[in-house]
Length: 544
Image (cartoon, rainbow, N blue to C red; front, side, top):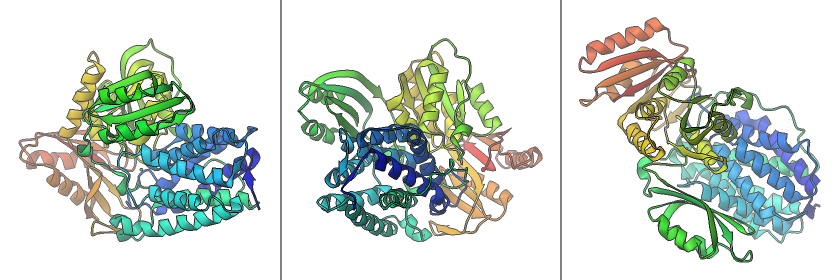
């Protein structure tokens, strides 16, 4: 029986966990609620955690704390999709709980799991139960309750059992899961990670294989957050250098918590990093200065901002290019398809990260793009709800001022760029772009990759899915009928412009024929058609 985890054992547990998840990523992908071929939970989590495995595999460590810190750093930068970002926060918390420990005792590990849970919940603005967060919460509670177990093995057995109980309960917490007849994909992925760690603990570590291959799949519906729900207008970030290292930030955290949301207070010895969305940043700073000296203060006036789930990293990483003189402001956009990329470039985007559906760029990919544009201020357009969290995580790591416009669709991103003024200030542009994305209706058409039922709609593999704002609006076995019905659903008496971007699987002739009929049907609307060349989605549609 194992009484404590040293550096060598923890490293082996992480490598085993990474490969366990990698081997089972396709199964986790299959649990996604939506049947569309979009960015997958299993693939995103595997790519995120494999980034940690690749980083630590060739290294030697003298303490368990050093292993945990390396894993936290690698997963933070390698995080892909909502599930990957939340996973990175869990291991960030684990690292904080293990800080300074040469070996990890039973009690240390239990407290670290609780710290991982707390950190993950703090990182998500509106935590959704019935997800990976629920699973880690049940596991953390069990770990703390069993912190006096006689061995690490006994602790693992207890909290793994509780994790499986929590996973089985997720369909009762999320109607979407129950209707689809699945458990939460992110929660299952997390259990695979801890199962891999447990196997290494038992002496049966899963051998580390090559990096995971690309798998096409879908993001979980429950991760979406409506930007209209945002209440607090100032994104406030700073660092406190404590007057007394022995003081803790608990009282400060409790004092400011009622004044906002998206609160993150990360305490590391004499340093406290603070992030909060609030309507009263002055009050927050007044409370902070009681604890210590304030540095790196950044307060952004934001109208809407929110935290919300592939290819290999080499396929989405920005290609190196010659550095330009540092500019005042630049925009980075995520897009797949040559035509879509050209549109963004024509509108003033400085750098296009190739990705989106099936290719969720990591936090590190976004950071690399930020470095390439060489600007003092950078605006990022994720254009996909499953990339927003990774983009917002880049804010903490970037050395320049980065702002994220929460664009969930390609049409939103394009509309945001029509409001961009290169000579305008950062705040003015952010405000204008946030306002602009509220004025466009977004639609898209893809196909179902499996049989399922969503919102009482019976879906069969191969059906065409008409999506509005990322939600399935209609299902039809005929592409032309899906196209016309979706346009009918989007156009109202206020509509003036209809724009159609056709994908790589649609011919120019077919697109022109469909759009020609629109001109006859909607004589009061200007109709524009353009080759987007995007994979996975037959059409992106915008109505303004």
